[in-house]
Image (cartoon, rainbow, N blue to C red):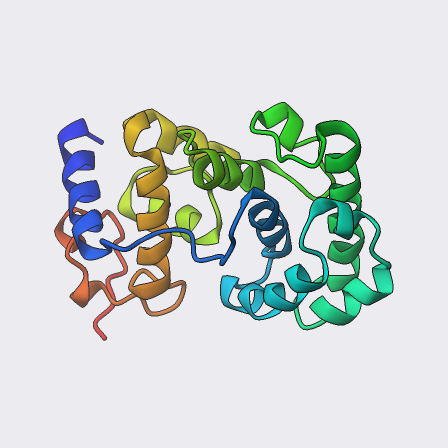
Length: 211
């Protein structure tokens, strides 16, 4: 895809979603990384419902590191995989305390060494928490990126690599948020609202919705 076309699409998406940003409510990088870890296979809205109580009970990495797993499970039991996630965020807090003095690191190597933190979570923390150009590929970015024609990859890693090649680095963070909002609002998994989409004439998705 030509650079001029990519720029045009990104410009339009930014106009469509001027307020696109991280939807996970957080006040610091500790709350951010925990919220992102909890959001795996769960909606941000569901995570936002439980984190106020979670962070009230455990406002710091030190407090969460000392938490009883059953107490944490009681708080987050409404989200998917809550048992595994309860163990992971406690283990994550312990490693942050023991290895990083309670602070959240910013490098891929350090972030991905933390329990429950993979490439996507690391990318979100780097972008949102540290403003380091990063491009996280979640289900929305994966779907919209492929439909628009930014990538033909069949894996998250391939789609991320493709997006990083064709999207200017200075636009990675904003593009990530724009693609997420587009996937949530118009380019939905089922019955995408192509007739309402301002980038339809540039999009390579062939099964246009007539809704």
